[in-house]
Amino acid sequence: MSKEILYIIKVGGNIIDDEKKLSGFLKQFAGLKSHKKILVHGGGKLATKLAGQLNIPQQMIEGRRITDEETLKVVTMVYAGYINKNIVALLQANGCNAIGLSGADGNSILAHKRIHASIDYGYAGDIDAVNHIFLKNLLDQDIAIVMSPITHDKKGQLLNTNADTIAQEIARSMSESYEVNLIYSFEKTGVLLDANDDSTVIPSIKPAYYATLKAEKKIFAGMIPKIDNAFTALNSGVRRVTIGNAEELEKLISHTAGTSITNE
Image 1 (cartoon, rainbow, N blue to C red):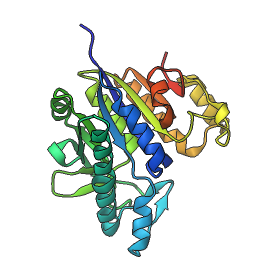
Image 2: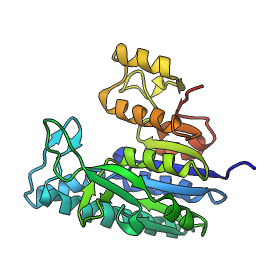
Image 3: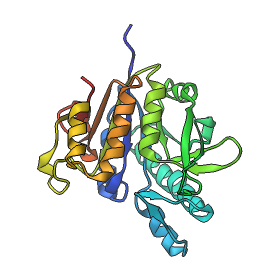
Image 4: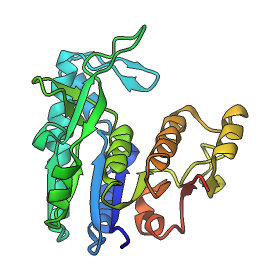
């Protein structure tokens, strides 16, 4: 007996910050009525903007936010609060029953404070476990899950965790029960040979070609962790990974747009 399909879709980039684009994306997401689905969202620029208004200095190293105690308060309010609940409300308006979660809710994502040899990332979290049974129970009730990038360590400490990694870890865990399709969606049309030219989409990337692209420095730095996550997911039971434009979600679902990451 074949497994039921589950779509795990991560939305990020400038889509979160653009009310019109986010609304259009969520309308397409809500339209996946016959499929189980989980939406993982990033934080956009709102947390940085609010931190500035509150005079809380922000530090980024290699594209990752240093999450000190005050910054953790801000990202929790913004990610698990406003952005998460705004997405849930918009999905309800489109006839999609949804529930918004952080990793602490239902003990859904357990993590630990990141350990690094030379950098203190503060309250940044790396994932230890996903409570796939809890998430499956919600999906079995035809509830779409909206996951914010806030996790916990089961000792009372919240942690700020990379949303791409959350999507990949949930996809790996849920592949035990479902045929998982993982989609990374943002403002670009896919993985590009030229980051400034949307017409240079690479239709498919296999491991050998990926190694060549990296060696020739044809993939910009921010895309490498996303593709690394994609191959990790594929090697852990996820059926398919696609990277592309959130505004073309229906085409990404039908595999007629974006970049397919594959081992085959």
